[in-house]
Length: 157
Image (tube, rainbow, N blue to C red; front, side, top):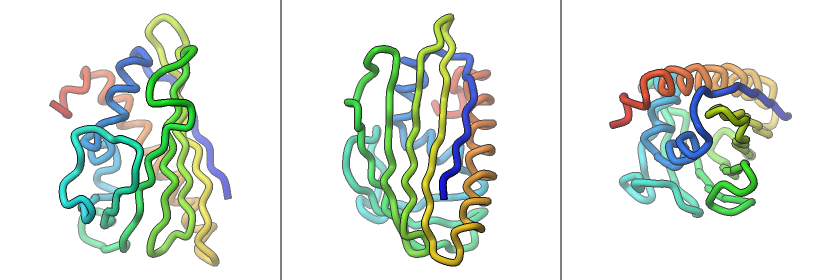
């Protein structure tokens, strides 16, 4: 099942793209719905690079959701090309057989960026519930993106 959600950020694509590469951003925008613990490697990298990362996931920091593979890919290259950047998390985990999350960033001009989360989920009988969670989760994440942009990403320093 696919869920897509788009918003417009009041920051340049270069700023948004640089922040997207930081695990600290993921941790900040996912909290409090999801908390991550790093298993392999034991500590997060300073910036995401292509590869697979094993994490534990906790709902509201207390309810264990099992392990998850975060599979970072840059299908169109690691940088911005022709006003566009794409990051893919081709993940899977204990509860979710497929969590294929794509982030699309597009330069809108005037220092604004169109940001889209698209995720395909497969979790057997849990798929409709996981899809609903994804809708809530990505709405939460995008609201937190807006707050971070408004403060110049101060919470991540």
